[in-house]
Length: 202
Picture 1 (cartoon, rainbow, N blue to C red):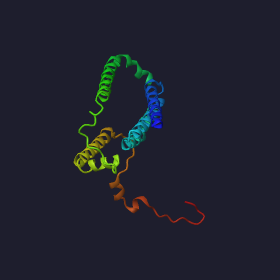
Picture 2: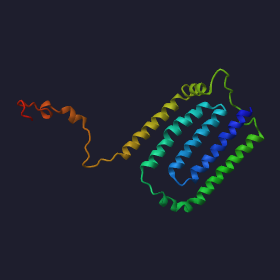
Picture 3: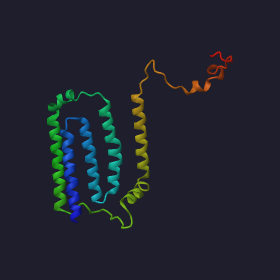
Picture 4: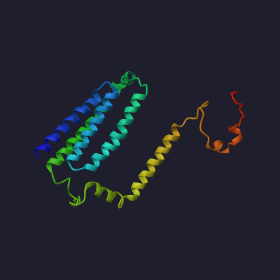
């Protein structure tokens, strides 16, 4: 029990420190690296409470895709971050109001959790001992909510195709592959047989 508490406080402290560094680092690349560190520590906290599936998804999706994508975008694009910071004070009141609302909600949530410890578990069916969290989620997702799961997959597919279509630009002077033209070619159009005399060269 003491080892679990030490691990919890270690993960939580590193998570809070890395989250502060994400918003306070001046270099955007450093901010993304601290964001990856925050994701890893959040996954460690999920493992401590027994939600290994959520921890795995957090590492695979957010660290393996989103954070790495942010890093590549920040490193590849020539963004002038000094100009982006000029409007910081303009949006500071709105950001402060949103942060205050989130803080109040978190305080209320923690207050309800500690005032009525059994309130969060009312109406929840306990998981059998022989079934892991991942197996239980898989059974529910692919049995009770299989149509909603397939619909969400189709929505993501449509969104991906839409993003590709919106960003596709046809520029003049750029050579593109045409499968129909390649299949219509004749051997005589691309291949010429020459009889080269000996020691004469081409």
